[in-house]
Image (cartoon, rainbow, N blue to C red; front, top):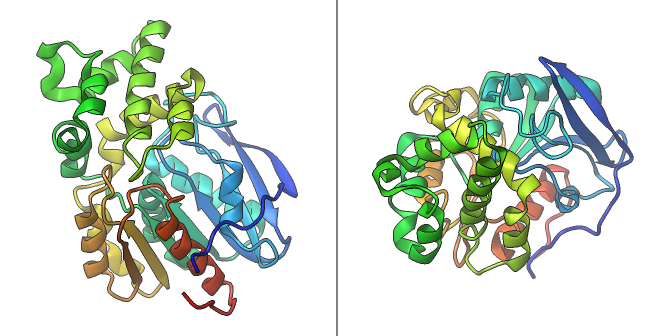
Length: 320
């Protein structure tokens, strides 16, 4: 039987942490105080956390830290891109670990969260007890080109047509740069219009089957502005990673127990990069899920994620 989310749970603690340089990040802790420490890294960049993310962990076994990364969710300033890089976020995770009083913790990241999880783990391998990674994204130029220039356009021609509609023909040779100009410009109306188009394109292409609720969230202006501005800010800067850095430095964490879960038909993050991570890190469990796209909520993906968090907490496995 496929595993699903644990029942909804409310945080037992929440607050704002001043991380300097004008940023304050929202964090919350759920589950069992003093249980197995874990941190959840959301996607995007700019996606923010949701109540459902708490339920990926057995609340009787885990003490889970969730937080909105700089510039999104309830963190402030909203959609702020100053002092907002991969390495700022890695430092923020360390601040949160210290706040939680954890010597080591399980790091769970999906999509962009998998990128950040790898960057954090390779920087602080001594602080990571296990890694659970979903929808692998290593932020290389070919991955960016596939989603934002040519690739997914061939799978979703209708969504692509709407995505490029705000960009005049002469600028379409570099869609990302064209969106960057609009999302970082001075006209708030242009920013929001561009943000909604950018965000909706992703919201409608990340699962095997359409999800009207997700599309509506990605089309909402406040959410879309942080999501799109932060994504284009990070991606225009290559996520501040050296070429192929995450696979190059995988030797730093090959001793860490890990689980890699990826959908066969993941559009934003082609499976070849998850497979490359598997080949570079053969010690980690690798699950390529048939009949699944990118979203963590797809049944086969969710099943493997929950089984992984259960196993790393020492919970006996169920058949299936």
